[in-house]
Length: 132
Image 1: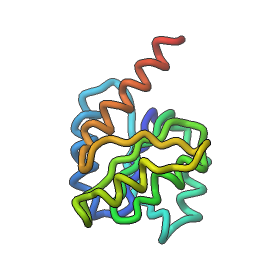
Image 2: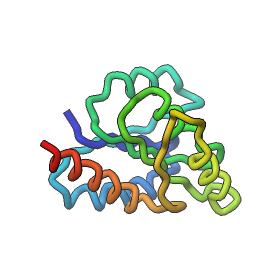
Image 3: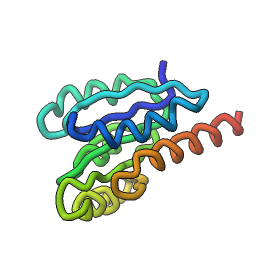
Image 4: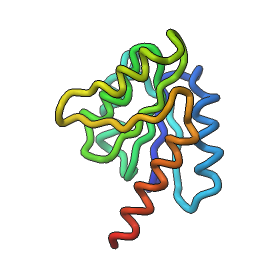
């Protein structure tokens, strides 16, 4: 069982994911990294999210940035979106992540800020641990 699942929509998001894993490596929490596109592999994403025992999801996506919202629609666990500056300086991805419909929340960090995505996941896990 892993504590944090980091999902990127494309291998081209690896540099942003590396910023997150650099933070996670220094923590006591376990994590795994997967590349699963919400558009190209929706069935694989559905199966992964529904079967994951992760407590928090970090999702990294650019362009339409559908990945964070799709993950949030498939779980009740916290989902953090990291927008990528693929086009329009990342503004399109940021707005896609921030403008979720009621009942499908996604937390968002700054464009290309994988490190803050990891820091937020760690804060959520620390809070959950403190409540025990």
